[in-house]
Image 1 (tube, helix red, strand yellow):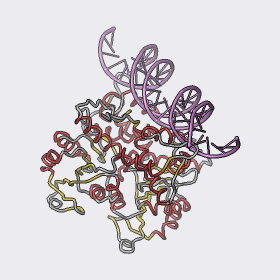
Image 2 (image 1 turned 30 degrees about the vertical axis):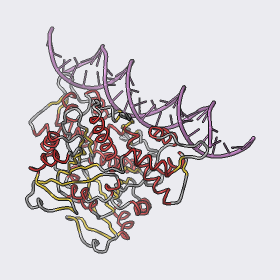
Image 3 (image 1 turned 90 degrees about the horizontal axis):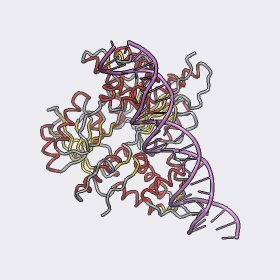
Length: 227
Length: 227
DNA sequence: TAGATTGTTAATCGATTAACAATC
DNA sequence: TAGATTGTTAATCGATTAACAATC
């Protein structure tokens, strides 16, 4: 009877940041925190913090702030950090291996069940406890375990093909690290982790700044509008 | 005399995507492409494509589209894919190693000069051609080579400390993969690659969808507003 | 009570989408 | 010429920031 709570995408992305700050505050022995301080530590505006938090909890106390334990609990609950989400990784290259072994994911409720690859030398091996399986077994395993989340770390050329296979097997959301735009049917969510796009922002800034400096100009953040 | 071209952040992030599509089109032997087709392949609206491209080039021909070779050249130029940007990675763990060895970066003009770590077992080794050096040498190397871009792949605990060291040595932009919000002085750009935030979006969607399904509800993309 | 800080409404800002005259 | 597609202006949309009465 709880239905679907609609929440802005940007807000959703900030929630884990708040959560991390709160955990740290707890370690420091704090009991309450104001939107102002939370915002400062998280890097967001205080009004933004209040607005974000009100999407999931209205327990802040005027004059006092938010009770950290309660708020953290609330966030953990909302983000599903308590129950785990099963996922598979496709591609046992360097990036896939790094993600499979990333210790941070456990804390965020992600459970990598298997890594798939087509290289016979890798198949049969494992990354920590996670087995490396042949891609041929992918559809069956996804179906049998009811996996909903897939992570793609293969080269661009094979990404679409593997996406199709995963979608056909019932995958609902894809975290894509391959430098291609995947085509998926309505209802499947793709999140592109486009390293080149990130890099573009940074190297553009660096280059602009350097040339501005050479010309003795001030930069005042104008190189990239709006950030 | 060229000054600083101001460009919206979002536009800047889309440019590498256009570039990749164009390269692929060239391989397919195409000569011209319309904003409509480019948009379809890249996953953006056609009006958006025209607007984005006009920031850097107004050479599109009504009725015909954009000459692919010229446009690609223009993009490569703007994004600085021809001259390289030197960078260092801090943290020779799995993720740092994966990034240091990522073959895709070369194509985007990124040149990793060194990877720093504090583990004596790793120091002196290398990742491909890239040497692993002790963090103690970080300030000197950054200064000597005039490095402007740093990539952080250490655990959260040591990220701030290493950031401070890099900034003191003259780093201007930081690509942060550690799950913390870094404090930097005015003028230094931080780009957070927050894996937990990405994950939150995806697992939220998956969970909401699953519960909606159980309850026999339609989802129509309402789980996450605005994407 | 005085001071601090909330939740929320209104104002601002930036980004996306629609529309269309200009032109190849 | 007829059809297609550009560059750009106007309309819409969503997200951020400011402001403030309510309240601990």
